[in-house]
Image: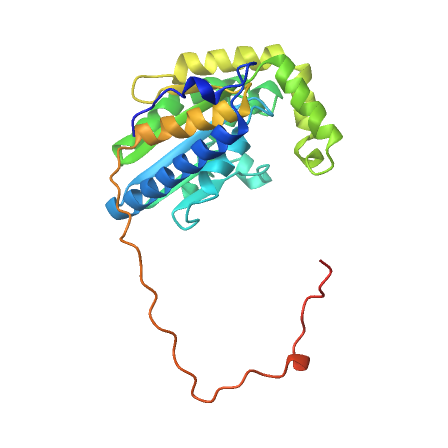
Length: 272
């Protein structure tokens, strides 16, 4: 699907997208994602998409918009938690390998093996020797994935210092979002420059021709979501396999069946 520039009337005076345009465009892109899903399933493709970036950069938001209209049996989100003591002793890539897709599947990694040279490095959870080994083995691992037939796409969500601070404060103020703000997130604010340096070195070794990083400018969430989804659709060529409208068959006629008495069942109270 070709990318196209939004029409001038889609923007507010401050450059933000109008809500109406955003919602219509998101709905259109989600229909295209369903078409992509059916193509992936039909062709037996294996697709891996990595989402990396600073805390509160908007990775979760775009993953949600990509996956919410798709079949979870085809499109799966992987967000691994803290490794166990046993996993800490394994080869760094080992616990990610079981999550890789089989034929006809897409896997969206909400953070990935790049934790090694990102948060784990900055927070001191890995040694410098492990980091340097990652810079050697990471590109080799990804080339192996590609040779095995996996389509690998890597996104880095870039957010400014001021915007990250505003989003952190919004999470503090909103009880439904406060769970998103972990002690690790707060620590990341103290190590802003270290994260920047770690990201730059990561790109130096892993932003390669066959496995490039695609940077999503994410200070504007709505634009970031639409831009990322549109780009994703352009990176996996697909055809429209939408079936013709389905006609419902007639319902089976009653043969004397009677429903059990209403009073014998437990119903949820009508509070609303």
